[in-house]
Image (tube, rainbow, N blue to C red):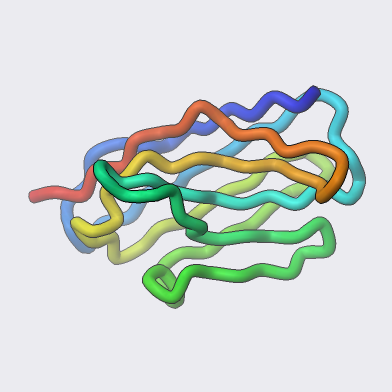
Length: 116
């Protein structure tokens, strides 16, 4: 079992920044991959950024150059630095922790609202 707790969401004006954090606890594999996903009202959940157990990263085209994903494997934490936020970034952001064929866990989500 793996528990994930997100924090750092909130209300920010367009052009502003937020930093999301995800803390993982429990029986975490050394091959653990992590990612941030988001779901806006009326839309499907989508990948925002991914970081593998080896540190390889991948981003949605819509956030490249604005968002940065990072992780501290020793502390089992992950962060998403979001800069130059836009209204279309408004969504509930979810942390995911998974190892293919072993486990797949999601956090409860944190709301990010970008509005003036």
